[in-house]
Length: 148
Length: 162
Image 1 (cartoon, each protein chain N blue to C red):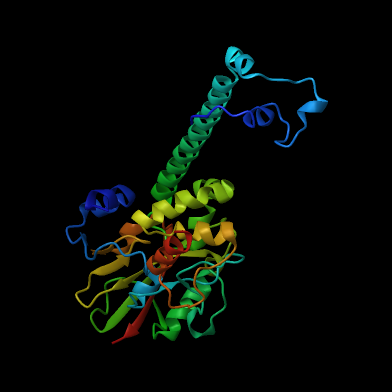
Image 2 (cartoon, rainbow over the protein chains, first blue to last red):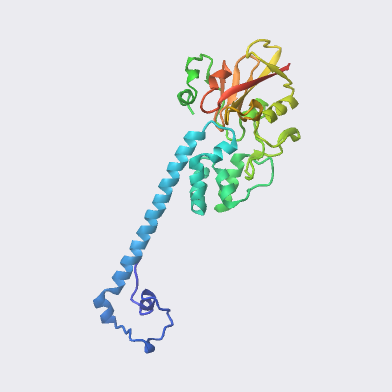
């Protein structure tokens, strides 16, 4: 992210509101001082670091989700009992990820419809369709459409 | 899943020459529905407190919403499987049979109060068909080959006259 030189940016960086009156503070800035102290680069570095951290966190969430999904799938791939499928330890770990898991679940059931859709029922506490004739693969499609 | 994947889950199938995959993967029906010859519904009693998409909660014939074996027996009674049977192969082909599997929660629990895990149905050719959860249907010659860590024990065989 690149910043244009702007004096309005400086109060944000030091935690003051943009309409803060400079007349009442000793915090005075001049362009030369800002350039000399490299505030803009520091801000850029901070935001890039934050973005990198967020990216790493998302990657980590996705990695964890994929591991839980793989194990859950291995443990329950031939089961019919929804209770056993839901009570699997790895399914429970996906549920514990809460709403952060929703985009990952949507991405997964979009490419590979499965009983993982039940995690959405539990996290959001709702069904996507009230019709009893809705199949699991139809429910997967409806959830993908709902979050698109 | 491949045949090898399934043999990995149910090792006794390796010796069964009749064992084969008999459908493509389909997540929309399960073993109980398939045992009742239904291919577009997922039959299971309500899983409280959850309300799950795609599961047929109007559990047929107003049977009690419970995953105990006794209510699955009642379900198949309603479908005409009214007699118990001790042998998987005798009386074929006059009778059609259903095998129900259970997992013991503890040894003191009576069979009827154990959780039902799976159902297999005998075909007119004498072989047995099973839907493996959300995976493929299989055919094999002996339902006891599916006993093990996944489905537990074969507890009851029911039959109906054709």
